[in-house]
Image 1 (cartoon, rainbow, N blue to C red):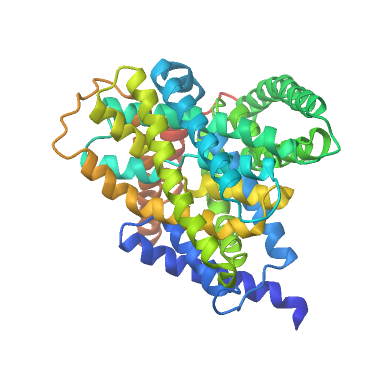
Image 2: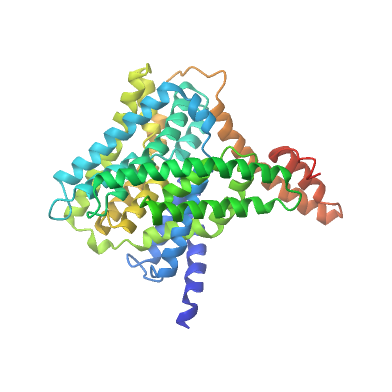
Length: 447
């Protein structure tokens, strides 16, 4: 019976995470919070129904890699170049100040005795993360997405992801005390050089192959995902760079191909249905509330305060230096403070690499959850009575809107196909129209 326990565990995780995600969505909270709560409920912190077995950990590891691969796929490199000095300035100060804040908190209020420079620095790396999905939805609801501040938030978030990955790579690679910093930096530089050269070649061959393929294009997603897994493995095994960094770089390489949206949509199905729920639940499964003694509780409160203050102050300072008003700078800072799934991915990597102790996991989860809840409230307060100059053109906002429309049209197409089958029509006609409309015309060879 125990041999089949993993099947029951996965079924319970999927059912529970979906249920709690639906509940949190009903009260306008991010669904990742529901998945975390499900993990807490199922794990040793509450019911103890599911154990964090080796199988669950392996599936969760795959989930992290796919999440970061998708993050790279959805990064608009062209817009990253066009986002300008304002977004770059906001991102730089929005990374440096939280990095310093996390390190200082860990140094002067450690949860474990002794000096733990890398661990304290890793707390700062967690605080550098930004996940603006909650912010974007809130700004969209208020009609502020296509504003000067909304565009600055979107642009800075793109650059923030890149800077955060670099910081994660450096700190994770320094985890082995037997390797000198010179060797660590050399291996990191070698990885990025190798990744760029091989990535350029793969991008060229992959694009040519897609243009000439005349058979089922679902295989584009299979090969693309395989490329992401291979890059993740090579990064970790041969260069000592975090596997999620390799996956992110692989996504970046494929982000400018003609089928990037197609690949992302297929990976999203895999991630949504299995990998992501298991990953977020596995985070909750690691929490043991018995460890929440008074010192941990005080640290958690301080960690949340530092997370809010350093991100708002860091990004706000960058915005102010780039010519934004005080009110606009405050809006930018608040909009950039959510860590979401990015912070959890980084924390999980710290646990896996041994840089971060498990005692810090509960504070990280509570920080991510609490900030996700209060950010929409603070944004509505910050934008109250604020008259922002509307942008005549906002490619970043339009790109986000397009991705949302793509999902909506996909759902509508499913309904159209179901109706067509019901009345005896050919559903392939709607599928061909949708494919051509959103993924581009087929090449002469495909036709």
